[in-house]
Length: 286
Image (cartoon, rainbow, N blue to C red; front, side):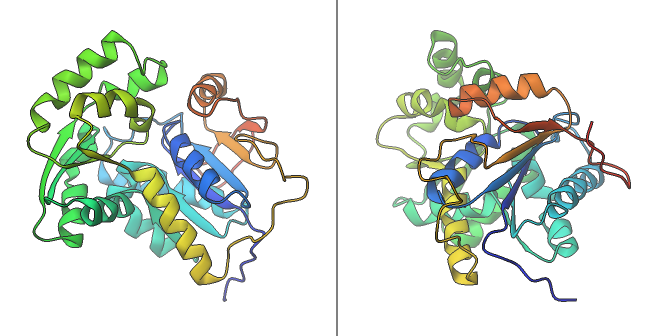
């Protein structure tokens, strides 16, 4: 049975936690007429310590939950799920699915003049080698250096984006990359929160690529090509703000903490935030 999509359908986004809010922010800014449904799987974060089979199962359950809400496109904002589970998700859904790794890799390959590309990400994403493969696919002549920066995540969530601790940690992670790269991919959804301190540390001459921004640009193009872009704002949305009443946020646990992280990342708490279960045969709201 052919699935009929409508331009008024929302866009679904899921992440293992709150980091994907930076992708939501980029999508919201690039596509102000669209509505979004966001799912943070906060009960099962982090995904990086899980097996391939487990990540695929979690990602499928998240995708199924969002698909049940009538979305027209799914954005997998989690780098680990993008690296490990995109084929499984795409085979299960009848809508387009966009991950964050491919867009970030293609943007870096297109921008890098010296073909010296660095990637900073979580340990699991680095170990997967997904960014190196994606960048090499876009430009076989590129040299890629991947670097795990695990402490950037708690710094972002605690709001420590511009203090001496953040600068010291950034220097430890990035100092030796200054002379080795001309382009640096922020390969974790939390890292854009630390963009200023990363730029100061790596040097102004190094171009930073926000995978969320690159993903939003590709989603905008894809919606236009498929004739699914919403051309007019939703009713009453002429002055839309992030986290407004038109977008719906779900988490699988720790809603209060998610709301605090959202306020740090977006400047306001979600006005429509619910706790849900996404696993098993039933998807019941808590």
